[in-house]
Length: 343
Image 1 (cartoon, rainbow, N blue to C red):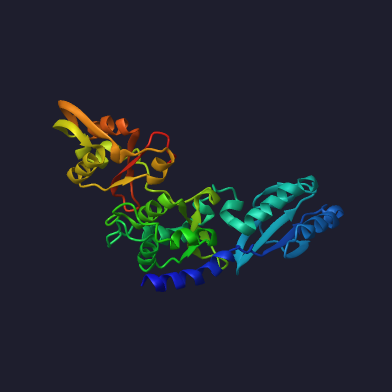
Image 2: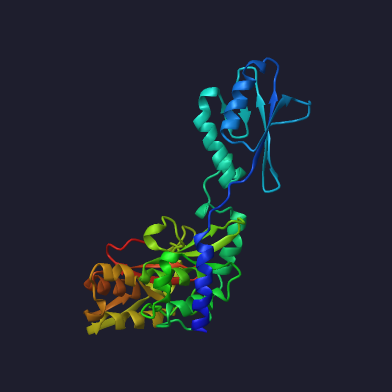
């Protein structure tokens, strides 16, 4: 199975190399008001210079309005050239001196769609919400097989077989994926697929980036971390309507505690079992700081403390801290990192 995956992986690289999203076609019909005739040639020259795919400048038939509508694989824009020598488009008003602003509007429409051209906030990964929704639904499904210490390539093969969205490997990341030395560092069974993929890739220095391919369909690219500014996170912070105290109530329950030279990682394992909550480590960030938590032992005098306080007081001795995060299915887990690790 592993060998067959590497063969498929090699074939996938060709797709990963060629991903350049084509700009959508834009057709413009510019309706003229009375008194707008003097500058028609100027606007014709500007719009053709901006490589509008089709351009008509004519009078209004009486029932046309300023709008932009989907037209096959592109857009049909109806604008107005008024008597003040302005063109009015769904994105605003433009004069002859606004060429750069108009160019940017056309670029946004071509590459990001109508909503963005009309001023909507940029969606995550610059992918329309309706296209990203199926990915979020897939990412909410749990990992159903054991993952600890299996080769990263085998993990990706197993997850890829459960996904409808294609999983592709960037050529620069292929060697890291194929290497027998790179294994999954945590047990991710039961964790949501999105968080699990991100957690498995991070220790190797890789990230998961949803993107649009040539057919404007979503695919999941495995990239080297430094090459991507936006990537799928290892879980999410608790929201205001569901604070940390409600996410894992047992974390705040007080217990009798006494520790005498207990390895900090053994303590973490015990707490995870008691809380019945996955605990993931930021292996990448911890290693970059030269930390070795497996060598650290901790002690606490007899006292009544919550598991959260116990974790906080003991992890600090290994120069670590923890956060509560939520996976893509809404289930909590504990994320342990160095004090200065990035998210």
